Structures are given as C-alpha cells and as structure tokens.
Amino acid sequence: MLKTGDPAPAFTLPNQNNELVSLSDYLGKRLVLYFYPKDFTPGCTEQANKYSSGYDQIEAYKAVVVGVSKDSPKSHADFIKKNNLRFTLLSDENLDIIKLYGVWKDKKIYGKTFLGVERSTFIIDEKGIIQAVFAKVNPSKDLEAVLDYLSRM
Image (cartoon, rainbow, N blue to C red; front, side):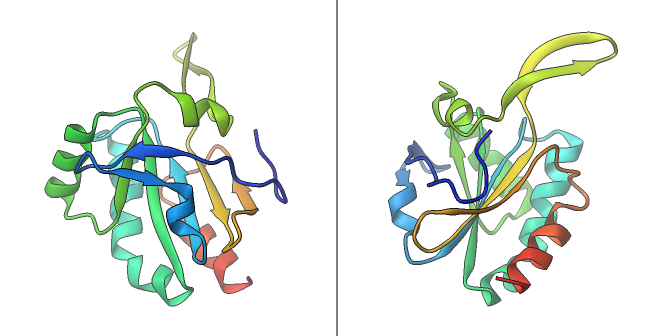
C-alpha cells in the first residue's frame, strides 16, 4: 500500500454520470479519496452517508471527497440518488486504480479467503502528495478520523 509522502498515483475514471474524472482535476485542493467494497451494502452506505452529512465540515478545510469502488457508473448513480449523496463516486471496474493504490487485498470472512477492496482512505494535498493513509477503516469512524486529520493540516 502507498504511504505518507508518496505522490498519489494518477488516475482517470468515469464518475456516476459516466464523465471522466482525473486526479489532476483536484490539484490545488485537498482530496479525501476513499476506497470502499460495494454500493448499497450496510457499511458502505453508512460510510457514504457520514461523508455526505459531514461534507460542509470537509469543505471548511478546503477539501473534497471522492469515493472509488469497482461498481459501475449506473450503480453509483443509483447509490447517490437513493442516499442523496453530495460527492462524486468513481467506477474502477477493471481494478486498475484499486490495485495501484494497494487496496485490492486478501480478505477473510467466515473462514473463506477471497480478494476484495480493503476499505481505505487517503488524504492527498493540493500538490498531489499523500499526507495520510487510513487502512482497514471502520465505516462509522472514518469521517471522524478524516476531520481530525484535516483540522491539523
């Protein structure tokens, strides 16, 4: 996985409207880039809703939130609509960026091992440098940790 001080790997992915979005679009802003397993699952819904409800606080720190999963742009559009989310979701159906950021990992549930997205959050500064990495994120506590970090930047 990437670490603090690393340049954030460049990406260009489709968003919920099937428009291409790149890391370079966020230069000059702080970016909270979070990776999550799947739209509409309980933990992912909780995490997204917390980011949406805390979005004004995030913006107060001159930051924006972008979520990434392997779900399709259509799934993201439906997820945003159902939950009234206030931020962009990017689709990485080929796992290119998910793997580049090192969040495609072995996971174990009920004794069964499989590959999946490890819920992770990266805070990237205005110049595209990773300032913080939160791995194995608890969806109910991610926003709190991000706001705490942003308040100290």
